[in-house]
Image (cartoon, rainbow, N blue to C red):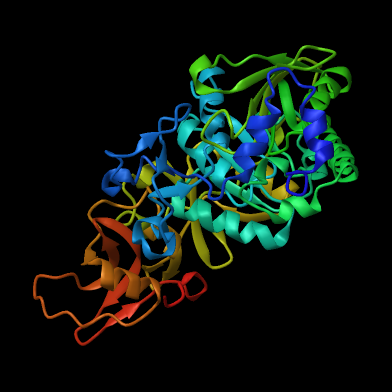
Length: 454
């Protein structure tokens, strides 16, 4: 077994209260992992969860009996659900128990790609919140932005910045989620390559990087603001020792999160400040390795005066009226030639974020005005803000997959069918745009999103 799980890791874990070395090693000998999904409540009408076991700490999370080929499910591409590891869904429980869903917040997901935790925040935070989803690595930020487009919320800004950039926004966010880059030991069952990359030296390097990320970003958290810190590592150096360091040097105090004893989550206390931490071990529950701890900022934190910020002049083109369910609920602005929308009341936030950060996407891109009309954007097709009466072209699974391949659809001969712009839909859920012409149907699915022929 020592050839599979690094002996140094097992030795260190064996010193922790409640840790069962034999059971931990045995679960890693088993082949095959656990697949879980978290449904999108805004789009979940056609996702059949009646026979699925629910994730205990997340009411929108479900275990699958086996892992399907998600590429062949149009509902996956439509954003009806997200494939997410069950342990990390514990953030939903933390949000509820810390009452972070009771009022609108400005929330920052600092290390957000590929988007699992950002889409979770979209679902569980107050609907009038503003979510900033940040990713440092450029090659990963595109995936993050695409996954948030699929989820369909308008209240999200995707940024591509180093954590230190948020020092320029002191006292700006109410909640900070740092799912920190780590040594990855919690993913050993799912990612065997992580085993070969693990070392005690890598743990120490990750611990140093985690402190740097936190120290760089914590100034943006308001006084009394909430930090959720998580890793997919088992190492104390990346978990409980970071918790003590936050209390020693960053002006944070720990917060406990009530849990059900039957869930199998191991609560730990850090050595110096007795900070509660929540460890997920795969031999004790149906999930992979995960750690989460919550903190409140008690140190004084200055903030810039947002009253001095000039808001951008919001556009209100009548062209959007027929495309949005509640056009009065949004303000629109331009990015290049495209119109985007954000919820009204966030005009100052947009100006602040545009001035201080590099934005990859802001709100929802609705389309490009042309001769008094709108050429609709793909993002609008997947948005929860779209008008419910937009015409739809219903597709069965065969043609839905052909559409997602950006293939050809047969011409329509139904005189009562849609004409012009229409939403290609599967089981009533939009997949993207088509344009229905007398002799053909043009497929407007983005070429960079098209799926491979399987």
